[in-house]
Length: 558
Image (cartoon, rainbow, N blue to C red; front, side, top):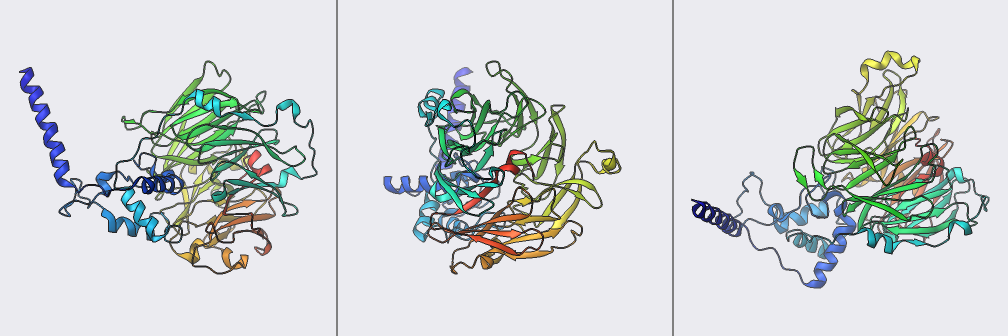
């Protein structure tokens, strides 16, 4: 009997393998140089949404069983037609309504064809990255005892902006008062975020290549004083903010390998590496559960670590690094970015493949709510304000839907008690356009700003929308940032992205993100009049994207 079972299993496996071989054509062949070029493009442009192993998250699954052409053009078992070379080239070139941008003004026709071939091949599995390798990458450029004991420059650090220069692998530090570039600092490639230490002295920037840089703002000319590589692909970083732990620790999350690293806050010396591989909320093992976002609580010595593919939210207690305690909260897939509510008790994060927002009660250490929203929520940090009808709300935009969603949030303030029945419900959907990445407001502002850089229409991608919070029935103004910048007209889309307020809430800075060879700009608007105040441009300022005001980032104001 045992021999018969073994034989049947072997025959079954052979049949499946033969069926698979007959069903699909062979993957297109690539020369070694072509493969290396494609791997580089995929890492820089595609892996963030589709994953290193191409299993999908914000973007679709791109494994060969979806991308390779069926020999006879038949549908797959699930009823979906395999994509194939021609269809893939069109999708890459022209984008989709689901939020994927067109790459025909970013990649050449040859590069588009190459990428269509590349994703029909089996994904390469990158190597692991050990604690020893992390330690070996660690560099202290200026030791702590050689650093200033007080601020050595005359900058208004509260209104300094850390600006990502995506394609040059740099950060521009811009004086928010004078609008002058203070320094351009070499960092990792395509810095995803800048985060501030509790004291406001240090800026932590994490590149998509896993390089974490620590910038000391007290130096006569702010510069990198330490760096470490925490993986091959990364997105998130934060510091310890609870009383007694100010500036003591830092944490950075990696996309590949899927793990997070805990470090000394002032030196970036690695202390512990923790893997995030494990089971999803659906009970299935996932080999690539990436650390999507991390925020630091001020009411407990904890970090909120959001693990994309598993849909698990980790509350990591850093009071005892050697004996690390973690609370695991099940939510929904795939976790992405998020931000605090106005009270800083609740953290709201997008589960964008499930079209939900998960709200975590960090005081109680449990899930507060799981809220259904429109397609592919993408809040950035979100936006907090008091709605004229529903009280305190938190806002998120969407990549795949034409609305900005407003969710009622709790408050202990007695004046908001009447709004409690609305808490954790969607109270309004404001008409917008698909392709939104960031929404933003400020406690002193009467306006809500939203971009739409992922929209396939050029004019929309180059514009931002502003609403008066007293009347959210229609936009107050749609601003074409590209026209306001006065830059030379080009075929390439100059995407208006990431509105960011000045420290006092009087100005809004919007990046105009063009191609690597195009002139880019940051356009500064008066928040009250919506008029242009300043266009910041410089040949050294290449592809600006995210901008992080020191004071607003330090205090989680959005």
